[in-house]
Image (cartoon, rainbow, N blue to C red; front, side, top):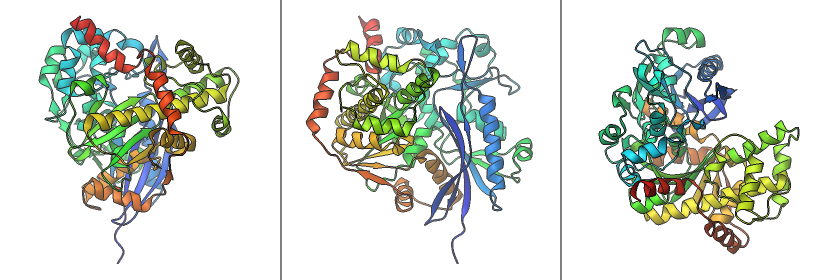
Length: 510
């Protein structure tokens, strides 16, 4: 008799779109299909950039309704993963006080100085192991101090926890995402009371911690009515930071792998058993985010395909819309490594004229600026491949681990040119896929929790490896050209988040 197939819904919200994916799982099979996809379009109101969280919630409901209607078999459970660091504030009745502020908003511009004045960066890194990024939750909370919304707040829910709360009425704080707040001690995997006290942050705003696999409630009656799902439909905590789920979804055949989760951001690094909290790690701007099954995601945030996405938006707004496949084909024929930029430069974080900023960065470093969209695209992809190389080499050096394969998962796995350039830059084979790694990781944790499958992360990855189509890119070409390009960037002043993290300490310590 064939094994029973169970269905699991993965709510996967990214910075540019949301989706509800349905995974069907047995011990030997794993499939995934899209029930519903919807845009994630931020809204600027009175000068502040917000997430349109109510629209996203409606998209989730529509997706669950589509999932319920797609098959006669009921859903075994639902899991939620989203981007990190952002949050919603609730009053004592559970009502949302305001739309969550987008991490790309400029309100945190001066928050880092205030944090450094209260807690030197060396001490902050030793306590939390988190990479300096100007939009980490602690900087958002420092920027929000004294505002009416924070003063009235009874609860603070990170974005996946907020969606879960609206579905179930039960509040919790999932650990992998909580680790991006810069308020978690990665050694104890609990809140750092010392950091919170030093910064004047009230930890009682956060509901109790949950871990992947913990129950997160069952759907409320109004949600059942809106979606057509039967009672009771449980929600299961997964790696609710989408990168945590994406790393579960890496189809690695051995432990000697590096991963690059690509999309709006590139998250490049290693999976470790313990955090690396050295001063060298801090200066290299590596982060120790918590993963599933007691792991640590030791990685560096890189600007990612945001640079290309925002360039396309700029060209479209000026009436010069470009077809991406045609543009990538032209970029493949453009002069390699003609100009490269630092993909960690905070100058590229904000929305706006990305091609202009790329050209300005090339001018500042004495390189020729791209002359057309194809050259801009090639500059972006060469620069990302170089940043991937640097991140992986640094992670290996700082952790003492060995790597023989690089896995690219997420939307960038579809970008053959980026995958090929990354293989060439790193001098290592690149395995591309699956593109929906976060949804796969989400589904796999739900399925293991439900008892449909069993085993540790290697077992879950073995199921992925045996069932999903993957593409491998071998390194080719003259590796010394990448060495010269890296030297070109290394010889220019450091402008990225690494410099920002160091600079605040130098201001503090003289």
